[in-house]
Length: 196
Length: 196
Image (cartoon, rainbow over all chains, first blue to last red; front, side, top):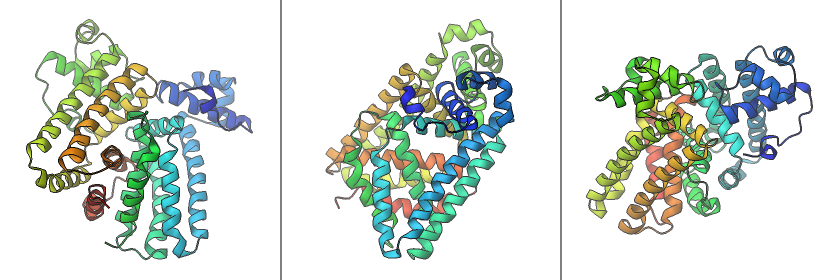
């Protein structure tokens, strides 16, 4: 992983700078391998400075998950803005894009670290599950109410499995040409979004 | 996570005992949080003893992945033993089972740890990717040659995404009744295994 990939967005505030350095540490050395002093060093700040923004590593993860939540809300707002008859096509297009752009290993590994930590740490589990519940409810509303599909909860569960599963494939099978899965993914999403 | 879940099979050899203790440490404290001395303590053995079996933590992960490989080979052998016309049904049944039995959080978290480490450590990446290649080739043979489906590589890629993605859902949405996804999963697998 190069520094370029790790630091996609320029940090705008000192707090962002600390957050990005912490994310880089988690990816490079794991959540448990990243002490606050190590994060401070990576952020080129004092340990006291890091503690000024975040009382603990848990709070850093909470902030990272909050950023995910903002991105998720933007996606939901986009789908909500579309007329019902455009939703099927728009969902397929977005998921095709996600399937082809799995080169963001940094983000995938960060999510793996957070999920592994969620299984150990009830506070992180709560944060991760809250984000999931909010995204899930958003998509259940879109698929169930707006698209009028039955069994929307189970459909969303499988949809989220496919998207999460695709992100992991980039680690297990990195040389694969992702574009070749597009027709198969389109069939699968079409199936999830159809009544039979 | 209870100890019962962590120590499913009774260790039969001292080496197994070390391996199970290491897996438990990786799950409970992360790969980077688990030193060889910590693993020794968990295994109730001396550090020298652990080093006698495994020269490094990388070798421990290699041994864990080798156990996955044995399980994967058993699955492949089962599918190979079936007549071609029974494969569609057998694949759906096995994946339904996998979708419903996501209570094995210990295994899911161990895999997350290993995958996150694979993204950091080229030797672990090589081991993980070798296992994936071997499973993938086995399923490409079953789906492509025995079931006669086109584009088998992409179908297997999506099949593996769905299965891997389902395992992660147990962390993100633990209270969900997994059985309710069965009809959706069956539709999806049917779609992956059909020509249009």
